[in-house]
Amino acid sequence: MSLTLPGTRNLAVRRGLLTSVAALGAFALSTLPAAATATPAQIATSKTNGVAYLKTLQAADGSFAGSGLSNEWAFSAFAAAGTAAVDVTPGADATKNARTVYRALLSTSTWPSATPVVTDYERATLNAYAAGIDPARVSASRNLIADIYRYWQTAEPGYFGPSANFNGTVFAALALNGAKTQSGQVRVPQSLRDSLITRIRANQHNDGGWNYGKAEGNPTQLAAAGDIDMTGAAMAALCVSGVPNTDPDITQAKAFLKSKLVANSGAFNAMFGANTDSNGWAVSGLNACGINPQTGDFLTSLGRTPVDFLIAQQFNPGGGFKYLPTDTAPAAYASIDGLRAVAGGGFTSPPPVPVTSGAPQWVGQSTFTSGTATSLPLTVDDGAGGLKVCSVPVTPTGGTTTLGAVLDAAITGATPSGCVTALTPASGTGTITALNGKANSGTNTWKVSVDGAPFTAATRQSTVNVGDTIAVRWGA
Image (cartoon, rainbow, N blue to C red; front, side, top):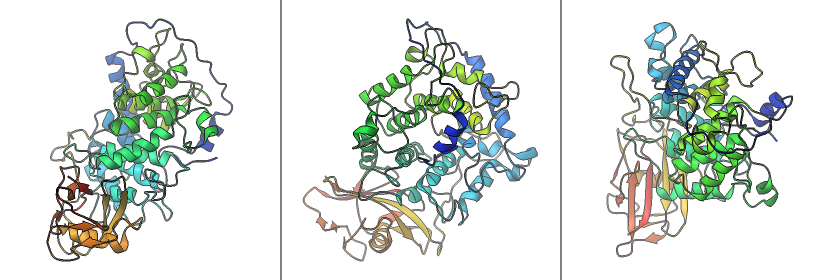
């Protein structure tokens, strides 16, 4: 089986790279030492050198990303390490800074490819956010949140993309919940967060881990071994969705990771051996859940931690990380995954404030461009568990549009279809009294929220701005 991963490689390629690696046996843990071994100074040096290495991956035109999979995950590592993407330039040429070039790429009509998959947009959302590009407002035509909403599975609510590729749902949770608004607000409604949480929980294997493929409803798959990488990602997905790190499913995941620790190195004994990418994903999952990867369950009986292993994989002063302990040269993806984890990052981080004079922390489209087609993300919650999610195409005639115009467009053109089937009133500027055949009743009325703001009365004339994430809900 070959599943496309949101970041570095597919599973078949990873297996090919590791088939010659002997599996490392995990030693039993005993009484834990009192202190972690990687000091703040060592971590600071690792970050400094790691950032220096990632800067060498920038092309002469300022790019980290191109067609297909490339080095765009570098933006998540830069942000975790405190470096703004706009400050990363080839030969000090500010006109080719990494953020501007990446934004231009994401804005092109041919990106990501003629046959995109949901993980393309999820990966871009996480990295655009880290680069200081509002993922919902990349350009007048590009809204990455709306792009993700297109892949909602109506027949299996809570999944994004084919459910067999479970990683698409995990990274939907990471992107939609982790890539917040510029003011730091989760932009998607709780009903959508809950649907994602439900599916992620249902796919947790009996050993406490997760894997890239769907396990829900399949006893054989649920009994199969979990994967280190995906366990880190799924843990992070739950935590950024609002699940506390004391939750039983997070506790089980911690126990799974603990059981894979190698005492003399701090590595996680991944499915095909210890490696930087697997360790990096696991540590990023712990980081996202606020679990210290250097203390408690993750400090071995021999005084080693997963962060120790990662730093031992780094070449200094060059700063790159090797993929396998036996490698003699750094690898780009390993260096990205390793740095992000050592720097304390999850799978994305808020963009640092730039040091470049005059450069803003955020960039994004500020208004609609009249006559330019774009899309808006919409959820419709009937208050009785019937959540609908879709991407709505709109071609505004001014700098703003209205809720009525968006709902009208959803009736005829939403992806997936059926998000909105009927609307009362069908025209004008009045209060919305019925949606999808469900009418207001007493205090239970249709309300609207934009970008995670409190719900207020829904009217046809309610203003909608470029990039708004729209949630409509029936209830008190």
